Length: 113
Length: 112
Image (cartoon, rainbow over all chains, first blue to last red):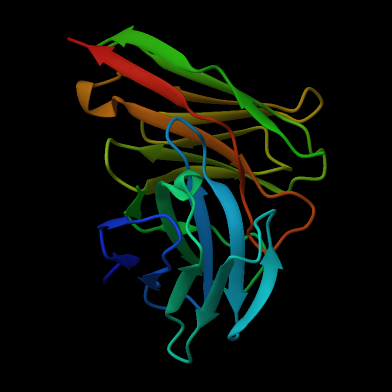
């Protein structure tokens, strides 16, 4: 039973560029959440997708956008990259019920130069 | 507001017990979680406790919840070097839908 998978594992981009990160949820899960973890910090909630819609959003600018596909997989897009966007981006999946435990992938390490 | 606080560092010897503490602010939190993160890896769900419980035990792990003081602790019995990692406490605030608010994490270092 595959857990949450994310791709790519590492990525280097230049300021101003755009990036797309991908996530496949754990089997049986229909909800995908994205978190940003800066070095030495706890993960910060970006947004959550359920039934192909953004259900909740954290305190992140509109440069951060996402998408969920009918197979429940998801993408995170970041436009106009800033140096401060360098972080580990974690995808987590859960079932649609509230308080369902989140299962995390290993993350994508994004470096913006 | 919602905030979760943890001590940043804990050092123990192999075989000792470790206790990692956490305080949270949202008194309406229904579930509280402990996650483990090893270097270069994602977060591994260790255990969680429902807010109407005081204690939960799962093999070497014991979670204690003091809802009055909004204090959560994770005790690891017989700590091993493989337990060295960063441990995150997290709560689901009243906004729900499994959106977790994390602390900054406690780095546990286990020496032989």
